[in-house]
Length: 448
Image 1 (cartoon, one colour):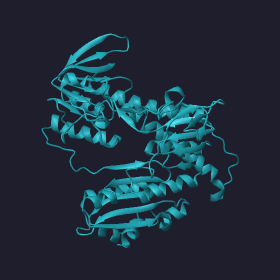
Image 2 (cartoon, one colour):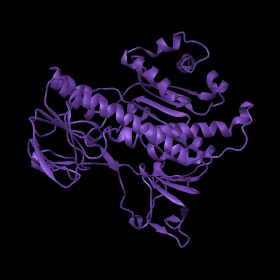
Image 3 (cartoon, one colour):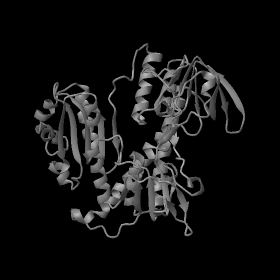
Image 4 (tube, helix red, strand yellow):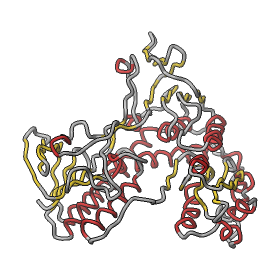
């Protein structure tokens, strides 16, 4: 083989296809499904279900808009069927792209047995070996199960298994106040469940500025979700009536464990290849995505850092440039955008206020509630806040958070300005069509 790619995620699949199209004999090894977490267990299924949740929410609010819809019921089995169908379509598209490129595919578990050699254990138990000068690791993450006394003895859901329910829980307890936990918390509240979020920290979404995290908590509370902060779960038990109880205080019919994700490296045989891991099991790599083993590269979530599909795909572009086009691309200094698909959305890009102040910038803050945005008022979704972090010396935008309707799309406009090194005054003085959400950037930066 000329190249081996371990893992068919949103970076691994396209890179294997690029190698094959370049005339390199390429083997792609995948343990479960082509498409990785995003297509099969992450972005595609969750956002499909969240779309159903938004329809339920709008239907329940019909009277607010002068639309009488009658009694609203949720057919979760139908929601699941729709989700499965879209996942199958996306997965099939990924499979066809890889086959068309001429990639050789083996399903099974790969582990290193020598620096440039892997052993593949196929589903029928047979084993084969394969070697290549270039090997790329794209094995991703899996739900992290914390070491809490009693957890192993009670039934619990993960971000994967919760999407296979056919009935909404009577009372869902979500352990963890991060992005994944909050998306599911709001989704199942909209499907009719009572929901309690239990978080050990002082704020939800620990990566965000405190004011943004507080605004998110306000929205969830308004939606009827019970948010418990500074709550450390010391034990989990199952009561006599079958409920799951946390620390003898909080009980629900179902428990979702959403306390993070762990790297798929513990059974990869990295020591045999000379690949070093950090203290948390992530693969160490430099800015060119080179591991500590010559000729072995890493991409996507398994290298640590923010676990987003677009990061993995950008890793693919970097490795394609360097390995196939003679480039010298690097991840250093790239902007990181992401969207938390709450409703309203939280769109984020660049530095937070906390990060900018720690870095020593002359920080200026432009902030405005979404209730000042005409389009948001017209759509009767004026919850949230817009916030931009600006360097007072250069007038450049350092980062932004848009918690509001279509916040991810508005944040992308700010990202474009950052990519073009435009001063905030360009957006302040620009003319945008009325009434749009983007028009709000005039007023946002008008306060500076």
